[in-house]
Image (cartoon, rainbow, N blue to C red; front, side):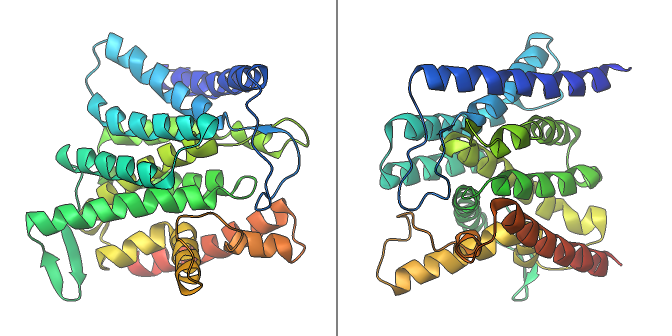
Length: 314
């Protein structure tokens, strides 16, 4: 077994250990997910999954930092850490959506300042190169949108995990379009997510991602999307505009978010106030189980993505 295989194995078991430890800590502190009218569950659950995922990544990155292995820009963990911390505080004490939105804007600006920014529209509306200020605005909007889209998707068992994994796998198999350091981080997060399926689908004492997990993963996905889109044309031969490629890569969270926000606005409600108007909630209301809803959503969107990706790269 080589060193990297050992690291991946450690990642898997470290994620299991941290899921157990954080769940016990949340139970000890009596911090359970509140069952409300919009909840899709009625059992005891902790919102500790995000702590386990972020903790796994943090400990591994800390190890490489101590070893002075500079293959990765560790500063990107700063905005991701902020998203995690804000989400964790919200999981425990509740945070007003306006304050969360402000922090999301701050995080998006930090990511842009670190050089992760949309560089071209790849011909969308006939536009290729865009001014730097416009590029900043577009990138900040995209990051905030994707962070919230990921958070919105975390409404039934396994959905946010699966949608994130689908995207990260796409990034990993297309690793020639992304720097080695980022690919490694995406792989670590993917492996760390896998044990969460067991804890998420348990009949009792479930573990949810919580806002700490969904906001963190939203930040990860947004960074991955920007890096992928910037390099997909020249490195992978994909010849479609950036907005269409972004939609294709993360199709369900984006479509569901547009659907939900539009519906809330038309009804005169705040787009940030949670309800049960999401597509996955509609499936649940029609009698589908969580597993059936997950299979319908991921299966349908997965087939569409595979067909279209094959078409645009042929």
